[in-house]
Length: 165
Image 1 (tube, rainbow, N blue to C red):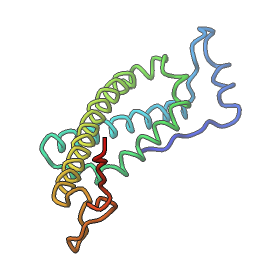
Image 2: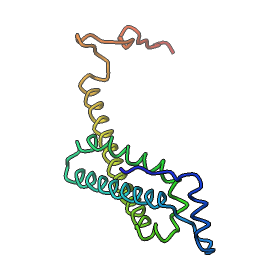
Image 3: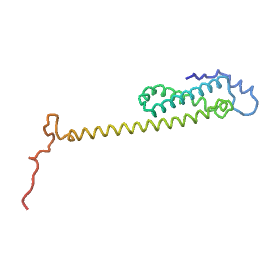
Image 4: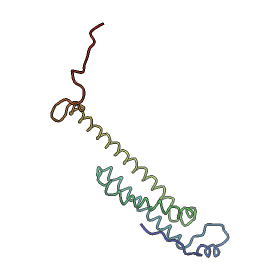
């Protein structure tokens, strides 16, 4: 994860003055370095997501917790730096660095990863529900305590039948 550099005061103005009157967004050296750092971080994030997807599909579910912190850092970095990069996405330099393609790849990888993680979550909840059901069946839903004595107010003495009509 490379760092994004901020421009020096006046550098953007100088670049605009030296540029032609094409009306195109002017990039400074720092802007280009920021685009490079963003592209590299996109590639790193995509690769990490692909590794996680492959591991989950292979049944190596422990990888989710191993990758969580790293994935969170990369995603947070991208989230915070996107506003610095957005004005330059239409620029030819951003197209040359394939940032649009990387953003599409990231979107697809994140969607696939999210779907797999969602399925894992649903499966885990199902397992917990089945364990709770089994525990309830074996414990007779709380009718009897650990010592085998009845719990609650479900005793035969409380049952009354009115026999008079």
